[in-house]
Amino acid sequence: MSSKPRILFVLHLPPPIHGAAMMGKYIHESEVVNEAFECRYINLAMSHNINDIGSFRFHKINTFIRLVSSVHKEVKTFHPDVVYITPNSKGFAFYKEFVIVEMLKRMGCKVVAHFHNKGVSDWQHRWYNDKLYKAYFNNMKVILLAKALYNDICNYADWENIYLCPNGIPDSERLRPIENQMDSVPHILFLSNLIESKGILVLLDALQILKEHGRAFVCDVVGGESAEINTERLKGEVTKRGLDDSVVYHGSKFGDEKHAILRSANVLAFPTFYPSECFPLVLLEAMEYGVPCISTNEGGIPDIIENGVTGFIIPRKQAAPLAEKLELLLANETLCRQMGMAGRQKYEHEFTLPVFEHHIKDILCDMCHNK
Image (cartoon, rainbow, N blue to C red; front, top):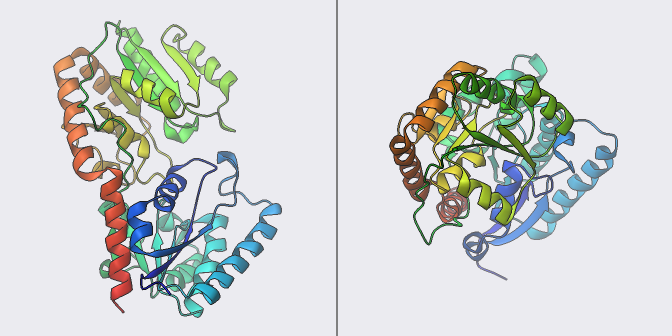
């Protein structure tokens, strides 16, 4: 029998690809984590694509029953010291995971919930949700991605039960520093699925302003279609704003193709107002490549972007401030490069995958050794 602490991970794994699933993949593949603990893994995902996330489907009922059975069986046979779970904070997914968490508690498990989303403060006003949240957060530790996200759950979780663990990503450029040179026609990058609340239409409005100011640029739009915005609608929105010669849609890109686009970018624009936005990995990816970021005061983003140092924080749903900051960076190559390199340094110190892996390991060790 191994003398290592036993951890049962109930987490999201791709597909679909989103922040929580990618971090689950990194934990699953982590030598740091798997060498420190005896680990078992159960995939919590019940959706196969982005559009299916958070929705109710009848086929999910059978999947959920099998999931509960698998968790129950692993607890009975594996006897974990800690159960780590990546739950949802609201909606049908929360109700589903509430059942799992309460079952784990009744089986005597020590549970830590790692939140990659938010929404408790929006859903707590209904009496039955309030009652469920009180039970859910009772006698449970919580991992948050940023201190600012504590406001979402502060009515239910005491600060002493909170761990902070920012996300981290692999460093594909560790062999050389990044110093983006501004091309004669600079490149603005939007890297996200085509969901309205990720800010793509706000960005197009800002680009229209830049165009009217006589500013030359190319905007590379990279990300998968959604039920809200497909290729045809995106093309129509681009044409309506007179941006056909300035916006290029590349679809979804992964691996070397995505790295090549990041390497050619001068500025990342991510004007998100997505309700569940917490700690978008796209910002870390841009910082890895020395690309300054412009984004919003949503979720934990202010803990990623140091306003005026590594990029800019702008108001949500407003094209004019976004256009202003884009124009400032495109007109000042020195400032653009300085902000990009400051972002790269912040990434190296705080947001690499090894930093994340050791944070997770330390949190789980603390839970195993403290009753």
